Length: 320
Image (cartoon, rainbow, N blue to C red):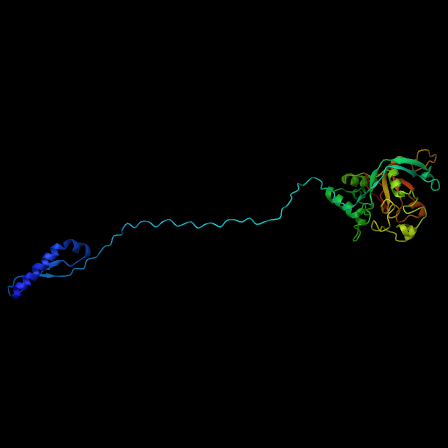
């Protein structure tokens, strides 16, 4: 009975092995083997032994992951900036001088003086059209702008003279009138500034004011109204240091004499012959810081070589 049970178990095991063969091959179930018969001659029985099988797991076709969602890029918010204006450079920068101009109205005025030096006579009426003239004498700072913009060299500089406008332009003299300039130096500045030098007649009309005075302030000399010899300073002062005349013009007497664009010749109707008269000379008007009363009259006249005359008491102003 016991033997029969063993046979049945063996048969059942074999059946299961055959039925599940495919599964065993895939999952590595034990493969049945036969053992040798025992010495007693008993019938062999099938015994199940476990043989380890390496299971190879093949990757399945996993669908690829969805592409990453693109991260939105930050938008560039424009940063407000100040608007700038680009100005094209020109060969010569525009003038940046500080002088202002005054309009002298058209009309007649009295030219000359019968009671002073003979080169100022005869007195006569002259009619002029309206014109503009600088309220102040041209300063060192103004002239420096011109030189920097153009590279201009004055006659004194070209000659290598130590007495030139730069040497006179010492610290603190930005607003002093430029000196050591010839007529042609002054003319070059005015042309660059879009102006010109005044004529002798224009200068005298402007200096006498709307009242026609002999001095910018009146007909009587007053040493407190100008920088002249009697002031005792013996040097230039800042332009506009003294009261203006009736037209609003400063330093039309004293401080520096001024170049004008007229030949130094006799007035119409004059019989006086000044040995210094010359159609090649140019007029110099007004008085400087070293001049006494009669030389600071609005009617005072002088002349000089336009090419070389350049002193420490001669400057200019422009007109147009």
